[in-house]
Length: 353
View 1: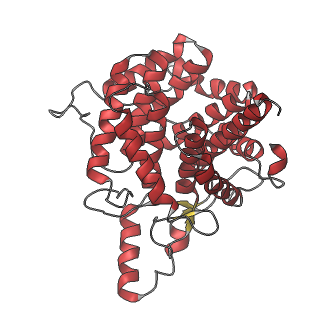
View 2: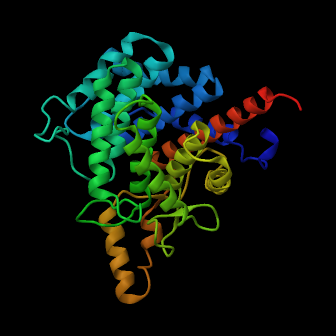
């Protein structure tokens, strides 16, 4: 309920501030902007805010008119398709499907011999970049090939990157459990599980990977409620974008019944309350890790040799208002709002004793 949140910390209020900031900025053909605009759309859907959705529609218009053209050839480019797929899901206007399907189908136009997309890199970003796009394609079209592709892809990555302790490394050459990298993996799984049919043959395996990672992550939750830039390194700063995706996945898992509320509800609530401290009055998120995994690794190596981190480590990798963080905190707000509304509905429907 609204009353359970301290002032300025409710998911609806915080999510609206960030989403409003996002739609005041240009929708560009880059994955972080697409993630942020997708976040604004799912938040508008969860809160029944048609005005917010209409602002996304206006900003998307140049892509429909041909003033801006989609790009393919990389998973970061193709992820843009999640925006028109979500616009179609909400409006049922078929004009959004052409670009969206082009981007989803391009990934499997010339698959590898193992059946994976030719864009396969085995880096931790990709379970979201590919998995979420294929999940949205299935939700929009009901064509099972998209669900099959996405589930197969994420499980192949889990086999390569998930460690025995449940965390994901960035890639085999950079075996760092980067916070946002773990978030990308978990977020992709969450989106795929939301889309997959209950009787899909890969659902149980995917759910097992999801739950194993969730349980690993909560062991490393900071006492503040946040997670660190590198999940298992408490010397690195408390980081918003990874925390945002983890909060999103936890809240969706509780709402969907994948995770028992008694065990995980407090974990998600503490994470959300901590995240709100990193959102200013203009809806700008701070403490967002840069994407330079190589720099993070070099900083950790320096610390191992010298017992301290380079003096410029914190400011050089701490972004403010970057779309990577704007996106994931909107996702978290959306999931917490959905969870709150679901709980209120259940309380309303519960019969009186």
